[in-house]
Image (tube, rainbow, N blue to C red; front, side, top):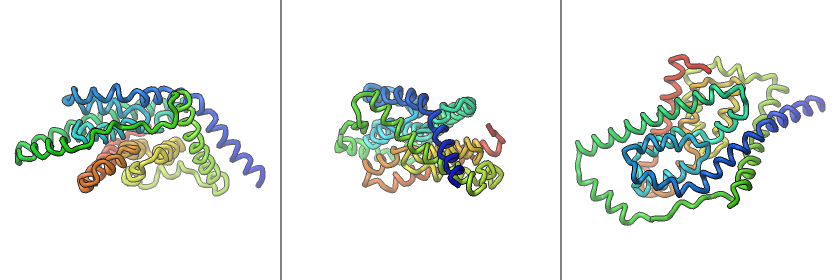
Amino acid sequence: MFEAILHVLQHAFLDTLKALPILYLVYLLVSYFEHNSHKHLKFFKSAKKFGPVVGGLVGTIPQCGFSVAMADLYSKKSISLGTLIAVFIATSDEAIPIMLSNYDFILPLLCMIAIKLVFAIICGYVIDLALLAFRKKRENNLEPLAHSHNEHAEHDEHKHSCCADNIFLDALNHTWKIALFMFIVNLTFTAIVEFAGFDFASLSGMNIYLQPFLTSLIGLIPNCVASVFLVEIYMAGGISFGALLAGLASGAGLGILMLFKRNKKEWLKNLLILLLVYALGVLLGTILNIFGLFI
């Protein structure tokens, strides 16, 4: 028993240790973007026609800082709903650095980024065009209400929640937190396999078309825990590529929480946005599974 426990600890520790160099380098870059995000967010106000494109590109950066900032800008009517949804869908949180740390998953990573980016842009434009057509068809008196809301909206600038002003220390802070969670996940998975004789790869043959419904729901958890959990299960062979993308497409980090915080009076609209994000995640995962895209 002692040898088995030692083997589990050693395996989990080594798997986590191998990821540390890449994790730190990625978060160093992420930290730079986070600390200078205010310089880039102004671009959205002068590029509304390209909002979904820029939103999708920004969302590919593996952190939740931009999703939070975009939710804040949406609450102030500075960006469109399509742009916000594009950011949410493209966001992958910790999945990118974790997959990047394992060279066997570079191809799935590149495919994941490309598919989610294209899907995010398409969804963003479809939503914006649908809303535009709806407003034109219905009543124009909604526009004065929007202007009135803007006048009374707070103009707080999104405050960055980093615990360190130094990007090197901030990257280190991100790295050890994710590394700790990765160790816990690795330890749990290894212990289950070692002591229970359970193989996560066996889940790949169970209800593959229902997987996106579950993973997309997991993705809604407003924390990096969801993305780490999903990518670890995928790398262990437990879920399909489509199910992974379903969960990551619905995972908007803390952006959803910011939306509910800033728009407390419009909770019904926030709920509809939440359901829309979930549905789009399920749609993406289901399409990939139907077409048999397994990587």
